Image 1 (tube, rainbow, N blue to C red):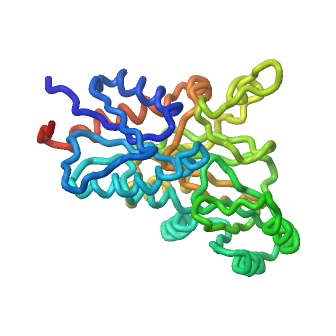
Image 2: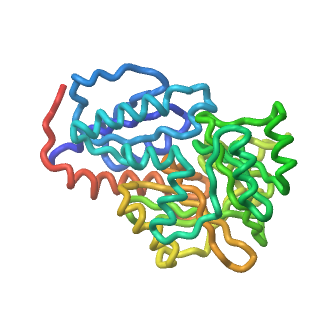
Length: 323
């Protein structure tokens, strides 16, 4: 039986690696190579090694002091694809994850309802964008991540005061998103996980204490003197959603991922008081809560590793070995 090809993981946050590495090992991948992209060199004359490449670069990389990672990642992904390498969540998916503005356009193209969204750079234009909203609105970074930078405003005057304060953070690319505030009857959003065009599961994430909702176990910091992990037990941020894979919205998500070359995604939506569902975020560097996975009996990284072995590897064909 032929051995499985090498797997190369592009990463900048080592804390997110263990669940994926464990899952790949369980599926029989014994040649896994880590490629850190905090800084580096790319030679256009060099030929990248054969194998499967997994893009694990996050739009929140700058919050960990890795300011050049996204720009370096763009060049590395272009280089890999120029040489025909198979990249899970390649350049097109990566560019989409780096821009809430592009996500809004793509979602609407696929017939998926989104909150009213406007992008602006500069104080004057940010305030002009705010005039387009009749009610409350939120601001967020165009290159988002971890829910950072999200603030609600009920007036333009309140926004102006924020823009003039030391608290104003325009984000890593200076592009500010203004978005319609959706008044939800309950404080949660729903996140749908998709791998290889297949529904994995849906979960509800509690927003009562904010929007920093990365489900990775590495992101769940102990709270209080008791050291209770908010991803665990009765105080968990995450709970199963009754949403099923045949839900019409989920089917649209799947069709979009298949049509746009998105191999894995965590897609988030919120429901208003009238039952309208608004989708607002596509997470390509999706993470999974191990605690939640054990609760529902589905391990997301295992699903991904199995998809790579059973679908991606057979589609590769014979590999040309490059030292």
